Image (cartoon, helix red, strand yellow):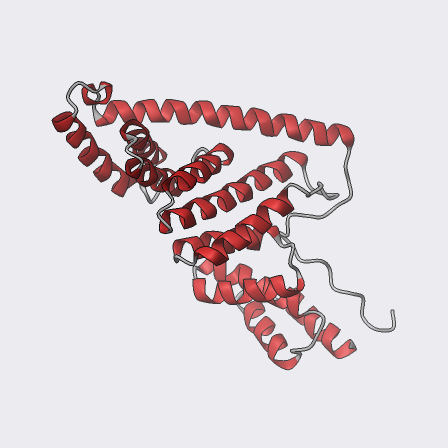
Length: 273
């Protein structure tokens, strides 16, 4: 209705945090409107930015009811659910995200390199979610497989490194576990501290129990340097692949297709126009 359209224009023209309050009011005043998906999308973005996980999940789920191909939300929800131990939901959303990512075409107005880079990031999150869910189910082989795939699409995914080390330890792959911890330290993210502690502890055990191992002769600092070098090599490899994919997209000049779900579709024109 025109009333709904006019109310939504007020939301669109406002600035945060007033925009958030107006979006909430819009949902309350027009719960059956065809524009509710736009409001939920806006609110999910806002709550994700301020770190309100509970409200982000609420509005992201509501967005997906009407916009089921919102890839960004699918991958993000898969990540959050995997961290919460909700393995079925995590795998469901991650698999949907991976299936959708492989079908995407670059939309008009988006740089090819930005498109392929963001797609790689979202695929990394989806693979991570399945790997993390597999850890919760104590399926170490599957966890290692998917966490390694996550690192293929984002070599600096510190969560994936830290979780991969746990999977490799349970598979009795001491060297792989050491290198995964060392990479997390080299990345320097939130997992760096715990990874350094686990790296030191595992290396000490190897020196005590496996003194003839090639790893026993390494220091933690040496391992971090080795991991940093390998990570840089993989980053260079990924960048080369993404640049090549972007060049191919530019050559084909693909302009039509779905977007990454980063923005909701535009609302319909107001009645009577």
